[in-house]
Length: 76
Image 1: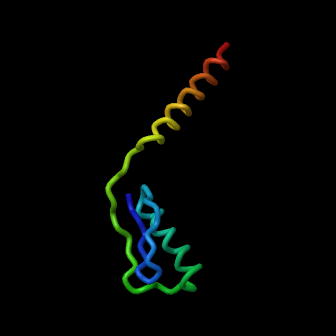
Image 2: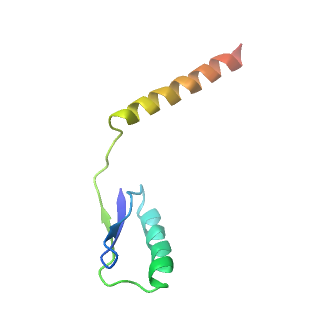
């Protein structure tokens, strides 16, 4: 997981699965907030993977159940 950080704006992006995605986030941020200039100290950092927690598991379980029901209904 990777995250873009801008020290000028004091922002940190949501984690991205790839470094390229975090770099693209940074490019968009630079275009919008800094008119394309590179802020001194901006960086891409690695962050530990955070798996689903709490209610996120319920959403995963409900989605899996709905997909299973749809497949069962489709076969009959």
